[in-house]
Amino acid sequence: MADDSAEQPILKRKRISVACNSCRAKKSKCDGKRPVCGRCAGYDYHCSWGNEATHRDASCTPPLTSSEAGNAASPQEIFHRCEKAIRSLAIDVPPEGRAEINQSLSRIQAALFHDSSPGVTTISPSSITVSSPALIQRIQSPRYVGEVSDIHFFNLVRQTAAPRGGDGGAQDDTGEVDNYDIDAPTTMEYLQNPISDMPERSQVHRFLGIYFSTIHVAYPFVEEAPFMDKLKDLQDGNPAPDLTHSWLSLLYALLALGAYYDSFRPDSRPDGSAHQKLFQRSLLLSRHDMLERSLTQVSALLAQCFYLLATSEIDRCWAYLGLAVRLAQSIGLHADIQDHGSSQPISERPQIRSRVWYSLYVLDRLTALQLGRPPAISDHDCHVPIPSRIDGLDPDVNDGEVQEISKEGRAGEYFVRLIEFSSIIGRVLRECYHPRRDIAARLQSTKNCDLLLLTWKQKLPRYLRFDLGHAFEKSITLKRQRNMLAIKFHHLRTLIYRPYLFHTSPEKNLLTQDQSCRSREYGKICATEAQSIASLMHNVTDTMDIVMNYPWWQMISCLVCAGSIMVMAGALIKQDAGDDTTVVALEEDVETCMAVLKALASNSHGANLAWDMMKNIRARSQLFNPAKG
Image (cartoon, rainbow, N blue to C red; front, top):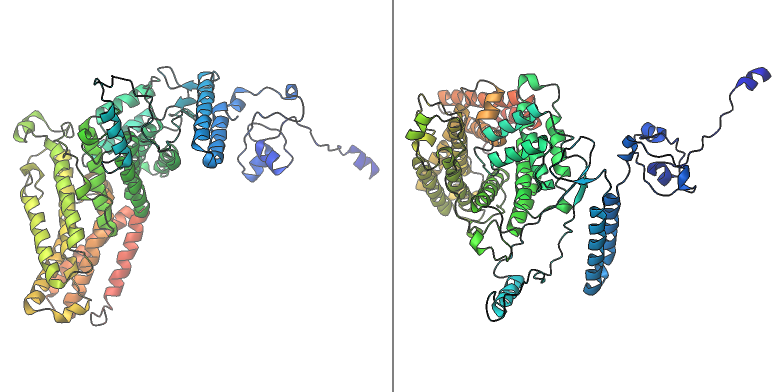
């Protein structure tokens, strides 16, 4: 026994010169292994290594290898932490003191970023490797303040008192303070290589190709050609000098959308979470506490909204959209560029600003309709000219078809018509679903809104008329746009008449004979329009057909709406001992909606939940008793 114990090695604690930040904070033993120590690896802690001085002499610390140095906190990161702490402590400091603090921080920042270490470079036309970090600027557009604002009036007085080139002299007032609103620091941000998490080049182009051939043809808030040129420069190692967090966030959001659409292909199953990772990257680049006040930032938030809508995170989309609308208003997208009121020049073209604003407007109306909530944008607060017909949105139209299609803009006409359609949605929300209107007023509002909608359809150009034939047409884009308009039209008309499908209010017994007849007729129109939605799915070939050729971000809502209406209509007809053939037709169309949802459910949790909802409501409809409600 003594011999055995003598052979046992004597275990001694290994002394190390520096412990990791996590072990140091927890006062735990650290084995000093880098880049991840044993304790952090075992407990799945985040292991980081700072360059703070230790109890021993700094010379005892072994030099960091290149891989270890990448994990060390940069001077820029340390500066930002200190800056945030200083600003939080300076809240109660008088304005004079805060101004001095801001100046001191600016001087430190300028010196720090000017004398950056060789491993930290600004984004410039130089080669970028995967491991190289970069400094990316934050751009702020001119702030918009309306005529009622005290800041607006102050600047008006300032300009009137000393007009440029007048008797007061053409003094340069660029250094004068014209706003007391404290702005977020417009510092450069330390960021690891912006393309380190990007998919392979072939995948990037496939994902973006999907985006620009689907969502873009309906919501053209991104200029395709300049965007792709900027991406090519970035991939070639020659990024543009104006590369920002917001542009990178927009890029990753578009990639996430394309990857999600692509995940419905049968051969894309292995990595279904790719789109989620890309979206998380977009969110990291658009932290809500550090948003840029810029058009690109609004576009990035808008793209994130479409991703959330497509993945059935509708409430989250609603919140993000509200943020995007507020940010857009802060840079005056809701106002004509001539009425902006800022002394600083506006760099973006009016057409681009108009496209972004009306994309927000259209999506705002769509989500308000889907959630039954008031829109964030009022028609009376929009003073932006409707964007002109947009060229370049229909690349698959040949020269022969160009002559037949109006020269006003071909596929770009769709966006203009969609804006008009969205204004009708606002009217429907205000008039058809007002909670305190009597039945006579509601009946008249229903008639007026339906007349508006039918007139809108009749005025569509021939190549967008979804109710007419289009033999021998080769344009995929126009086909997709007609499908989108058809779904939207029948869905809205269904909602206009849905209040008359089944009455549960006390007013039911107080209706006149004429009002009762009109209500029953309106209920039949509602069921017919729901069947029209289902009939659009009759010729669908597979899930990719639905995702690519229909408004996928709206399809689950439309199918649930149509399916539930047809279930209710069938139950009411059975209760009244009505026509059995009508009941059979309704049940077949309900089955069509459920079949589509079931097919989509394999790659969409929202579609899976919607299918369960429809299955349950069909079972309940067998026990439905209208007398009990």
